[in-house]
Image 1 (cartoon, one colour):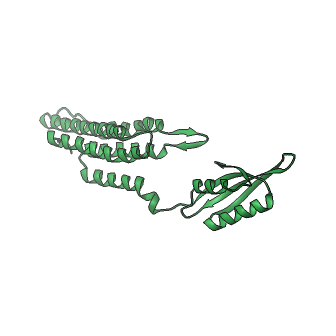
Image 2 (tube, rainbow, N blue to C red):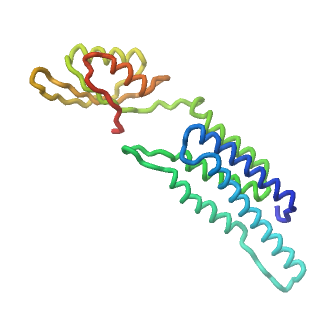
Image 3 (cartoon, rainbow, N blue to C red):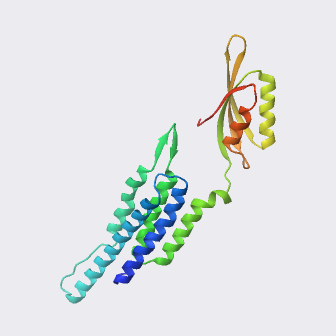
Length: 231
């Protein structure tokens, strides 16, 4: 899209707003750091840069055609490349670490994708823009439901009455289809009784979640404490 009419520019900006809005709403529904407005602004900004670059190239070609002796050259894509690299600073702002957990990577990736889609819209590649938007939405909202990845989790359980409690824990894990990959344990003497601490490395299968495990095990009287761990 070298020669860009005013209606094509308007269409590009409207499509950029639509794409940013659709992806941003999905992120906002999940209470992510960057929501609808951020995604719209990134997509529109990238689209403006792409339109501007197309206009600059069109002006350069026109100038050279009108005056063959000028020999003015322009490198296509240099400004757009700065958008792709520069969006990393905004994406980094959505990533945060809390209790050794990293969050916000998916939102940072969606912002980077929105910038790419904005550039595609601004350059007039509407088909690939809409297709890319659909793929991003499917990835964000549906892919995790369609493709289940068994994750390894760690649960720390403090308990008393070792024999019967371990039997209960093992039976529960077997019932819900969770495989125990490893157990790290230690014992504290509390005077009248021993307090046992087992750290289970679990292969989470099926639809079982951390929350289900914590809620169920915490109901057992012999279990004194339970928490999830990162390592």
